[in-house]
Image 1 (cartoon, rainbow, N blue to C red):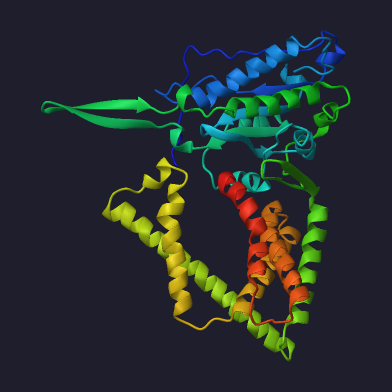
Image 2 (cartoon, rainbow, N blue to C red):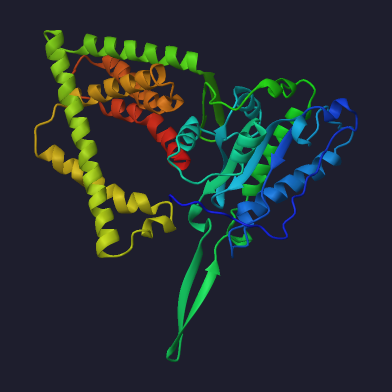
Length: 417
């Protein structure tokens, strides 16, 4: 960090294949599909990036052997490229995640894939610069000035650019054996199929004469004003920021109205005081959870010298840091009186307000991940209002409904982050 690094490649050849119908019109507009041939030494690079290379070759095989298929647009001279798709891997299992998109047209096209898997949260995190690594996607965006999609396998990143060192003791002499991790054996079955099906669908879509590929010639890479996310790997929702703003504003107004209707406060100031009490408890619980988790992290790192033990399995962070976080929250709750209704309703108001402010003021599409819990809690409170007028105790059904959307979308948020 802070130092200039030069890389030198020797005896490497780029391979470029163009697929077109042979006519000048068919060569005028092209979609570029990219993957890289190199790998971090000494890794064999099975997932990063031989997997993507194999997917590209198989898509090529399928297309050229499809009877009566003639692309209206080529699939590559730099001056004809209108859009590009980059295929990467930072793991070895799970679906291929769309984590960067630089045009609304590309996201709408991706929505037609058979198994779309994407989230605006991943796009916002990656484009923020928090993640210091990058992909080949940036080179095409910066030097070719074309919009596109960046997709990668991200599950079980423990096998990404790593090797395992084992010690065997023979008689009195220890022998150290290095085992590379990014191998074919460690790639989950179905990973290549998911990437291949989506890539092939995108190729066929953009090769059709009815697509927006020619119009992309005048589109420069930019942050799309679309909110998009997958739900349970089954549904893919896409809607513009304008609709998101209306949705979040409507939810905030409805939530505030519901809380005022069901509140037994005698004045607005008393209602505000109740909500501030709940908000204080929420913030305190968050701080307590951070302290609990980081206490364990400090012990793992400084005392046991096992700072990256959690990285060996995707479930271990939950095992290591979940219990101390929950325990710290319970300890905080037991040390002071609680108002169940104030805390529950403040959670609704907190999330709906954050969703509205982040969307309206900062144009952050990931505000949807604050809208999800707000919508769930709102639904739970509406049901409670219908079933009972008791505003002091929250029904179990309200808790179940209130946690439904966060539980459904939480896994996607975890993967994309």
